[in-house]
Image 1: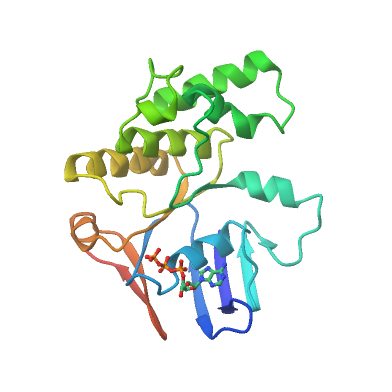
Image 2: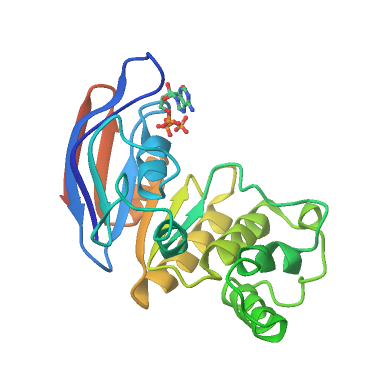
Length: 222
Ligand SMILES: Nc1ncnc2c1ncn2[C@@H]1O[C@H](COP(=O)(O)OP(=O)(O)OP(=O)(O)O)[C@@H](O)[C@H]1O
């Protein structure tokens, strides 16, 4: 599903953030990406989402070399990966519902179908009834769930999330994790970057550890 082959990544003339990274993730896996701040967790997720290109090596997602895909395949692949970045990028001049509708605008669904899908996505993350609120009126955990609804509304095969539980209390973090688990249970391959060791300890899963100058696949631990 996702393969990294000898991947190097640096920004501009800077040093390598990632150096010779190799791993593969099978369909339906649930994987944490962990490591200290600045080690390159977001960078790794952005490579999978096609938001950054490797400096060297291959990133292969659903059989496609991300650096070689033509402009026609790119939107398809972009939709295959639901991306939740650290600062969520919610639009605060629109309603929660309109935020979730945004990714549907480009795929040519009728407005009825799009609205039904957006409502279903909002229901899946437990926000039914809050559709017309501005995101600013939602709690941190609810905003995070809204960002998840927007990321899954196109039914991606892969979901990647960068620190989705940052700044949340334990109970809200737990709820967010459960939302991801629900999507994973129905087959969505899920990658979550987190440096919350407590969270990682409580949820035994395969973990990829990125430390400055070191990458380790810790495998699945109980
Ligand atoms: N667009 C960019 N241009 C230049 N440098 C960047 C860019 N994006 C990230 N970096 C640098 O790459 C390094 C890794 O950043 P990255 O965001 O991937 O780390 P991280 O492990 O996700 O950190 P955090 O846990 O703090 O979010 C950092 O030193 C960062 O400053």
